[in-house]
Amino acid sequence: MDDKKENGKLKIRNIKNGISIDHIAAGRAPEVLKILGIDGGFRDSVTIAMNVKSSKMREKDIVKVENRDLDVSEINKISVIAPQATINWIQDYQVVRKEKVKLPDELVGIVECPNPSCITNKEREPVKSIFLVKNTSPVVLVCKYCEREIDSLY
Amino acid sequence: MSLKQWDKKHIISIRDFSRDEIDFVLKKSRLMEDKLSSRKPLELMKGLILANLFFEPSTRTSMSFETAMKRLGGKAVGFSVAETTSEVKGETIVDTVRVVEGYADVIVVRHPAEGAARAASENIKVPLINGGDGANQHPTQTLLDLYTIQKEYKKIDGLSIAMVGDLKYGRTVHSLANALENYDVKLTLISPRELRMPVRMVNGLRERAIEVKETTRLSIGKADVIYVTRIQRERFPDPQEFKRVKEAYVLDEGILPKLRDDAIIMHPLPRVSEISPAIDGTRHARYFQQSRNGVPVRMALLCLVCGVDF
Ligand SMILES: Nc1ncnc2c1ncn2[C@@H]1O[C@H](COP(=O)(O)OP(=O)(O)OP(=O)(O)O)[C@@H](O)[C@H]1O
Ligand SMILES: [Mg+2]
Ligand SMILES: [Zn+2]
Image (cartoon, rainbow over all chains, first blue to last red; front, top):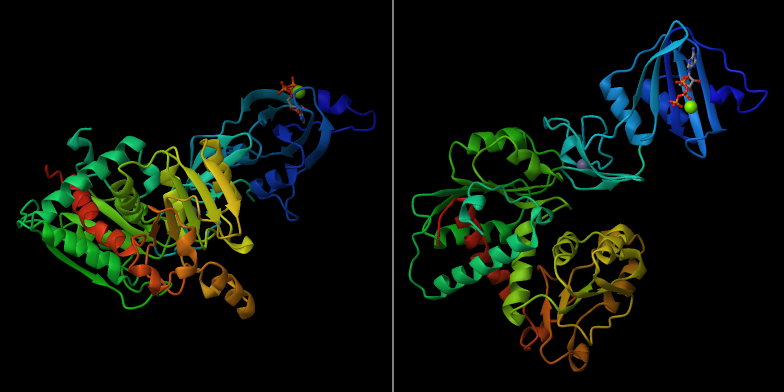
């Protein structure tokens, strides 16, 4: 497991069950934690590695969370800030499933439009936010409604 | 281009238009203007009703649509709120259009929330035309702007177009620039530093191989079209600064010797002081004609989206 042998001192305890989110763009791990809703109140073990060397990308972040699963909406959110990420499901210390995230063409109800004048931010109007993916690297999204472009999220 | 593809089409954003579609609307608008100037009453939309839903004050656009519909022999109903309220009381826009769909054959919506027209159009079958959604889009304005240019020069390709004033927030210049991406034009962007066109937009234009020059100087000597917009006081916290900027971009008699003989001056109106009334009587002034051109353009669009052949 490459992230463990990177540096003699880096020793990450294996988890029994949970997820390992690998190949996160360097520096974006905190945003991934935010998506997962992990904050000071979280009880299970969480391991974060930032800016570690990687053979697939120059530098990467990794987030491992014990006893946690991910749903489609969370995976889509992760794909926006870390379009290269790999999600590994771990059971009994083994990787039982591996999935590369994929940025969908349309993000429905996943990202809130930062434009306060956007119809999707009008409380009484029943309009879900929809973003169209205009560019994948770097990620550029366009609000389907107000047509604003955004390139940084969370 | 087949008329079928226009039938029941919502007109939401100029960005949804291909060059062929824009050119088609301009061609049909020309045809409509010819019919209009024959002075014979038209009955193309006889028996049909337009609903004008203006959740924001605008006399110009709503009257222009109403005129267009009536000139076609149709009828117009609707409302216009007296002042802009951040949250319009009562029904949501999404619900309102679903109700009005039951009354009318075509709907025009103006609303302060950006994206309101697109959202409103998603649940209805009756064609909806965006009459302006906040700072976002006003596609019929852009089409009438293009029509005015095309009518003057019989072409858009090859022209040199100067945009003057508030290029940062100005909805009309943004939409016009979006549309001009489809043509081979040279753009000169003239604005105070604080009100420059957003970098992303300028880059977008350059990516589409449009030659773009940005300047703070009122250099309009080479332009075929000078498109002037208003600089709003709200953009400047310092009144002194506002005064300086405002005065730097005024078109008055002083500019006349600098203009090309056939240059035209356009403005989406209402103007404040950025074009002196002394310009109105010159051969360059086109802003009133431009606003008048809105009628045949809107007539053409109304027919197209209602599936009426002409
Ligand atoms: N029991 C475990 N506890 C914690 N993390 C684990 C465990 N098993 C695997 N991982 C982590 O899951 C990720 C994928 O592991 P895998 O063994 O598939 O590595 P790999 O062959 O390098 O995969 P990839 O091709 O995705 O880089 C790595 O980040 C690894 O550290
Ligand atoms: Mg690896
Ligand atoms: Zn939006």
